[in-house]
Image 1 (cartoon, one colour):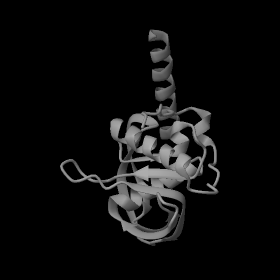
Image 2: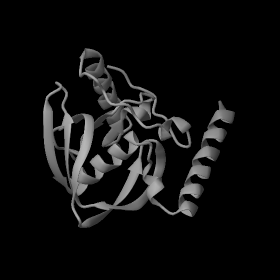
Image 3: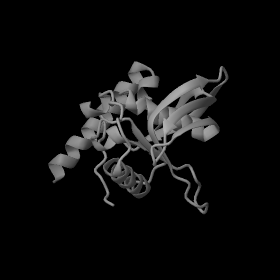
Length: 173
């Protein structure tokens, strides 16, 4: 397994719509293993393949809290099939937008179907943090960042701040 570089905004690759996966094979499982290791190392609770430069519909996540046993989920070609009319607000962050946290309103519950690590069809119904995380990561597959749910003014401030930090880091090297 390997730690992969995580792409940060405002990199245009994060706005790419990811392609469906045709088959879950050893190469894809290797990517998912690397993504999981990368996510744990960051540390984070979710990571979409596009965030590591692979525009495929693949997500890994683990919302287990510190002290709990890891409970990774591997989702290939996830598709939301239902959203609740009730909404929930969570403070979200993103590995592609380091140190940026804002409240985002999303459906409180979702149902989705996907292929698992072994390519088997699965369905899941989720609420709370899991529902938020699933929606956040599926947004990545559509080229949407959590800041796209904010006002244009807030979004532009964040993206300019990240671009400035990236330029300063490049100059320091």
